[in-house]
Length: 72
Length: 490
Image (spheres, one colour):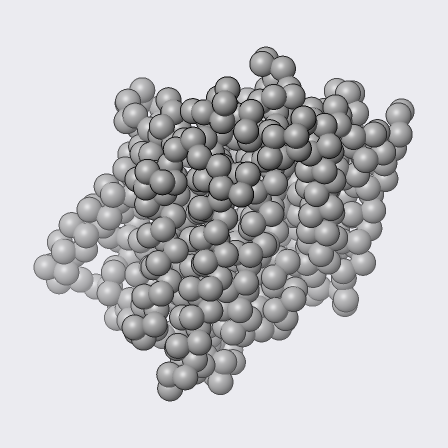
């Protein structure tokens, strides 16, 4: 899969890995009554679905993407 | 026998009965038993894939980490989401190659893509050896769950024997279809169990969940940060990377059958997109672990926090329900691991040719693996604990060879791949047991770096010398029997 849309998938990964380095996240803060670190991770878990949906939407139109289904 | 024990035992029997009901026609060959007819729907594959995310670790381990390390437990939420990002790209390709090459196991992939039965055997041994302690972990975890829920050590041991025997029975009878059937029930039970436990905690803590975290912020603020001894930013980042790679690139053998059984690549992509939403439920055991800081005594064993709180906050019959949910979280992964180990041994290590004999030998391996894990769990529960330290990091050493094998043309040769895997495992063992202080860096990641360097150097040397190795496959053809094509070279 060489579509530029695939780059969307890197966004939540970078968000997860940056968690300890963001002062507004990594601290004794509460968001919506929950720890900010936990909240951040849960938000980006939902963001993972959004990012992969964007990748999927962008790449489904590419010719050959569904070749394997056709071959199956 | 109290009501909690009765409900728990009845629940374990009911889970196995559901698994037994999953059988369609008697399996005459290993392929039907292991991957069905490669026609599983999005719905069925969803529950099979979700099964690995919700294990005894979700109930016991995650709450335990939150109890001792606070928000560091969030690393599990992160790496599971990264698993699905990687699976979105790798899963459909694995399934495609599996269908073309007739794979039934992870090691089949190595045999086919690297044209090396020897590499397949090494991978089979590595997979089986590292998965055995993981299987034992599930069984002993189940015993611990029942013991904590009922207060009876004898009851815990009895439930380990009963659950293992019943799991073996439904796995032998129904194969992957039985696991899929139980996985539906397990996930429903898990969600109900976690929500019930959360409600019990919320009603018990002064000020509910909001009050819980305000108290934590005022009295234990360090638990809300990733700047703690043993749970610092290095731990978080390296653990997320190594666990994300491990699950996302199919390094654990028992993760392959659900992928190989999927009807299409679209099924796997769809699940990879939506399964992360399911992982949001893992926030619940983390919250429960925090509640343990206020409600459980200081000397509480971290892994027992969730069920200790269940005992403190819920009536006996609801504790039984939570225990059944937790037991199902042990039985489903156990069943999948048993399938993973037995198929590796019968198909790739023992290399039984005849289809029917292969199934019979496989069934013997199921009984042997489960029996060994149970016996060690009962008699020497600590014996495999050291090996368990190597499970995740050790299996991740297969990742470079898996990635290279997924390419359209496999450029990495079998010998460099083999040397890299063995180097990574050796370095990991040295770091783990050699008393080497690496701080909070995940040792698996260091070993993986060595693995990649060694593989690269070995590949460069191999390419610079004339070789008798056969042409590496562009994409493997399916042979007549549906077995992976093998040229018989090491």
